[in-house]
Image (cartoon, rainbow, N blue to C red; front, side, top):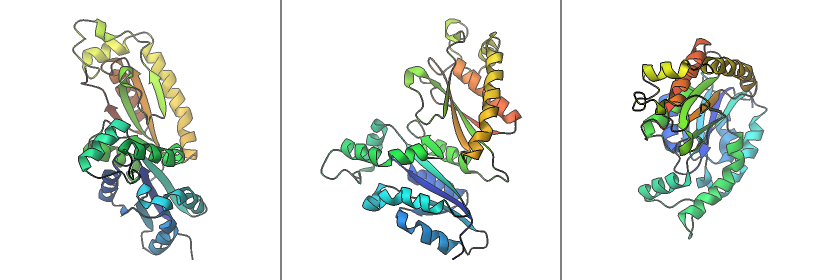
Length: 288
């Protein structure tokens, strides 16, 4: 049988991290979505769909609900490597406390929990998906995202484009709240003077023009942006060669209110000037 051509997205990750929301977002983008497909059926499903006029544009949700079959997922991915297929893995992550809260709200046991605690099921699942997480093309931490924000992140990562291009999500954050676990690169803005210590700027944020002007007027701000932009230009081509089109750049300061917000906006603006698609997310803005 002729090898199929087209696109395949494998949606996987932790139970409660938002797989169904991601699947619905892909469906809204026009993908044909299959939920809870055993890995052994991937090849036959692709063969079945290969005769469509527009080729394969398939997203499948594969997770530990398939129990013993799930362990064969990496073998199935390896078997697809020789096909004329653009394959990407979307991995959804969240912190343990968030997963517990969501699972309790759903009033459903964890598929690996058995007669033990919910946290035991989560720990077993993390162990099973560790290698997949490391190999994922797109990793999204949904701990701080609502369903609409997650759908937007999925749309940014998998929206249609005529030519392959790196799509960037620039996330501002506060180090005191922890580094985003889905960050591909992290830059630290704490070398810049903190507007928090300027009384008239303290209540404002990096989205306000006076704070932005204060941050960017620092002698080291523009040179840093120049060097970071040059670095990002260097890695863009490498990401494309490695088929990694979605990149998360985390920009941090102490509280995620002033410096990181202003600099994240400036970084994204430079990316857009180079023709890249850049979305800005201010994770911790408003938490203080």
